[in-house]
Amino acid sequence: MRKAFVIVTILALVAFALQFIFAAVGAFTKPAGDDAYALHSVNGMAVIPVLTLFTILFAVLAKAPGRIVGLAALPLGLVVLQVLLAGLANGLTDTAGASTPFGLTIAGLHALNGIIAVHVVVGVHQAARRLANPAPAEAAPVAVREGEPA
Image (cartoon, rainbow, N blue to C red; front, side, top):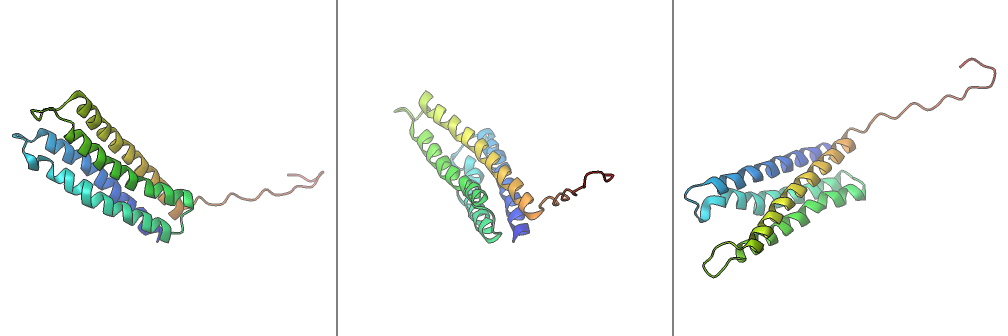
């Protein structure tokens, strides 16, 4: 199960990296229609949450310490926050439907939260690797009696 935990964290990292690429695809699509962010939306609303749930599941099945299980659950909360930030940013427009400075600030927080989520997933992956491949135990110190050569 510990190897599966590592593998699912790699898949999550790939999905998060793709999320940034899909956001750029949406931002640079001309003309920008409602479907410009389709890949970003599907990945963020389906793929990433499922992989995050699998990460939590495999952390528990790998008998990871509670701190690591909690760290594995954190991206799920950050994904929920992402959805809230995106919805709020999209809703904060003026009467003509144009972006407002406050809405753009919230959109910036959406991007910042995505960066934070990636860093958390990197930490989960590192913890999963350490759990799967623990460092070799250090040699126990040898007692030397006084007067004997070391």
